[in-house]
Length: 337
Image (cartoon, rainbow, N blue to C red; front, side, top):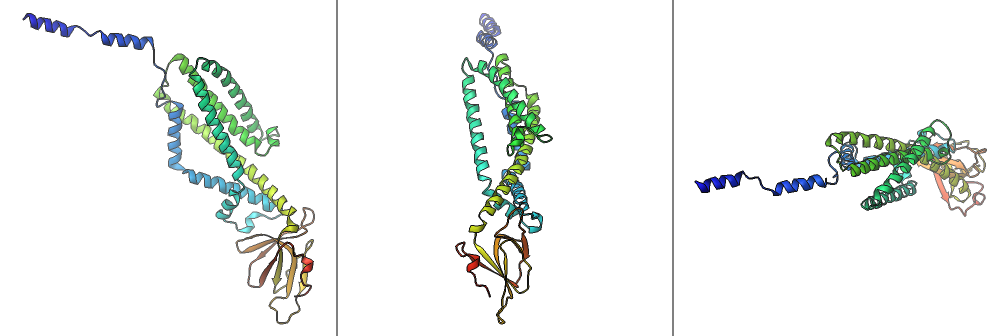
């Protein structure tokens, strides 16, 4: 009986170790850990949601198509030709935009890489004693810079601003400004949770997803607008370069069964007197701009913005094209055919 009472008393006595651990936990609250409601988790949820609707390859193809569409519209518009009559396909737009987008994509990739490196360096510095003090200085700077860029980019859609003087300056300013504001808000919440030693509740998870969704939408729209501006500028620049090289481009002689009445600076019509010949006319001094949709687009070798015309000629068996190297002058061609 005495042994049973002793064992019962020993069992009723609570252990001291759990009490000691509980006091240690109250004395040193744990660092906040990223949970379901953290920005990283919200961004991951948003990425999964977007990926389930739009594949990255589809999004890239859409950007290439939109860029090529604007580039073609600007390029052919420089010659006074509406690109919609050229019967260009989606493959034409994408293939013609790939080369022109290499430099902008490289620049964007470098900026994204620098941003990731900067974020990693900042997070590593936050672990030091001077980290929070640095963050208190950087957050207002990023917030003000982002607000100025976003406001300038948004106002650039209605009025001329300093950003509109730069190609794609307004949409890129809006995209960078929104990204800076979002990053500043994220760092501010991180600093607050670090100082208060409180984690982010899971109830804020979907709020974080919606925040990132709005940021993603604004940045995506801004990037599409930037692609529009860059595509238009690229098309105009390519058209000017093409005009500058007209004299050094391959010569084209167009033979035709019927008279085409092609007249322009540098264009020469030659009558063919061979009774056995299949073609009665030859046109010299032309430069081929495009072959697409069963049509040829020519411009005269002396084409200018003030004196020049573009010729859109349907392909047919009644036409024959002959190409000569740039070294062969049009005057060196026979005067008859």
